Length: 57
Image (cartoon, rainbow, N blue to C red; front, side):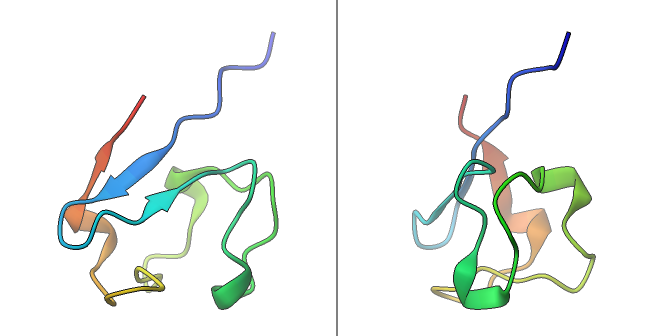
């Protein structure tokens, strides 16, 4: 059983990272979970770090 894909929201600008979509602006393909994003990944809208994201679902 595959766990549900969890979305995360940027506390700085409100951008929602959705694993079903990925992040085309940062070359992240669909299917990549938030926890699997590289440590250097930043919000494509405001450049906030992963630590500034909160679970949305």
